[in-house]
Length: 274
Ligand code: NAP
Image (cartoon, rainbow, N blue to C red; front, side):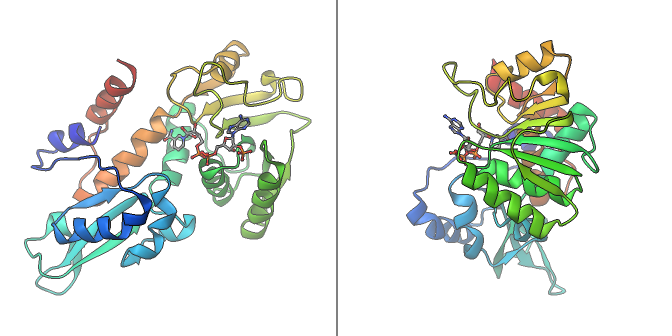
């Protein structure tokens, strides 16, 4: 996805994957900075560990307490910090941390389900890393009701409390709603493997009570949840768009140019599904 985007923008860059042990993350970031990298993406478990390791945090990373994108920056002749990619100077370099995950969720809901979440009722399955980020993003976007369901109930309770404290207008409760919701969102890892059980209790919440269903899982393209939701007449989308939009935003942060979404989506679909 990133290399297709880089090529479409005509940049002489390469996007590479590195396995870094969490114990070595600080050294890896410092090494990338010393070697003149344009930026980095980080994934689990590095996103939270990296927070104190960057020189400054963008508002997006501060709000979510996690960094998935780092941009290296340098001072231009006038003394203003600029992305390294847009500057000819390389004397003094700093790292800035961003988070493009949360925005990607709501963009995907908007573009793939035509859903703006403000004042909507949402049932969210899962309270792990992605579930928490999703809940906080939905809270910040002003959902009216957030129903949280998670195998480990204590985690759902802690998340409901956090939502109430940070977004007092959102009615955050633990458990299934008795009525209908505009959106059911799966942020558990159930559905990744064929032998997985369903991520929700069908008896407690029949899918014809959900207007739309979004599964953060994108492989398989249609999870058992999405298959049932489609059969129940819900609008459905999987997590591929979310993956695309967080990557596209990162490329924009590094390059200062609009991301070539068409090329990036085509490369992503080829890599994941072909
Ligand atoms: P995580 O932190 O490990 O959380 C896993 C979640 O799944 C927790 O809520 C966990 O419940 C639940 N779970 C796991 N096994 C279960 C089981 N056997 N029965 C019931 N619940 C179970 O993982 P994550 O990072 O949040 O990721 C969650 C999912 O989102 C994954 O499928 C991941 O691929 C997907 N994701 C997609 C994108 C994207 O770009 N589309 C981005 C991030 C994540 P407990 O709290 O009880 O353990």
